[in-house]
Amino acid sequence: MAAQQLITYRAFVELATADHHVVGLVLKGSQAHEGMPTRYSDHDLYVVVADDAATDLTRFADHRTAELDLVILPLAEFRTAGMPGFERYALARSQIVLDRLDGGIAQILAAKARLGVDEAFRDAGEWLDAYTNSVYRSVKNDRDGHPFAARLDAADSIGSLLELLFALDRRPRPYNKYLEWELARYPLPGWDTDSLLDTLARISATGEVPLQRSLFGRVEAAARRAGHGAVLDAWGEDLNLMRPQ
Image 1 (cartoon, helix red, strand yellow):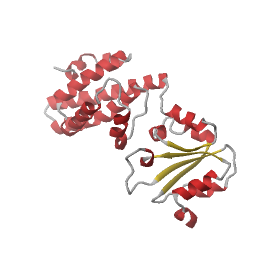
Image 2 (spheres, one colour):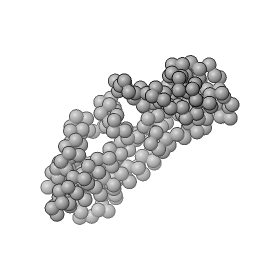
Image 3 (cartoon, one colour):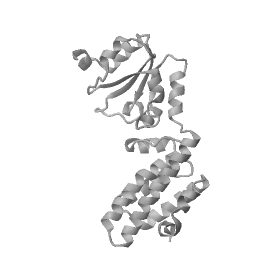
């Protein structure tokens, strides 16, 4: 345990690089996002070892200190990490420290960064329905004199909307911490980043119904262009309550 507590990021990378069983080192989190690290940021490192390899590095399994968090796993498990799952975005925007597979690690990460066509279509339909449900509840609660509930539902809608918009672009949704970072570098097609972020901030804070309706109108148009009209049409006349008046 003492060795685990004392080893630094640089020292571990040197140690792992010298181990021929290690086929990849992948850095994720704030340290992999330019401009995001702070003095509190540790190094989150995936250590990918050859399948069925016996390496002494397993003594660092579950290593976690203020400077270094390690995940040590075989190549086969790394291929499926975050597919699907919470880690997908982190891996999609990670940095390669070591790739002994002649670009194989890079190919695995690239696959995580791009949703499959069928996967993206399925996910977008589900998140569209969830977003619509939250907007409907928010607007209805505002109409019926429940402003607090309306604001809560409006805030709930934002998460589903982001999942939807990124799925429409076949990308995993970034964590909230990296949303502005992601959109500044990789804007969503058809959306002005500054305007979108301002709209989301205002809806989260106030639940303003006209603004929700205006946004819903744009989302409906984008969703129908992407082939999700059936999801929307299932809401029938209730759509009129959510559309711009």
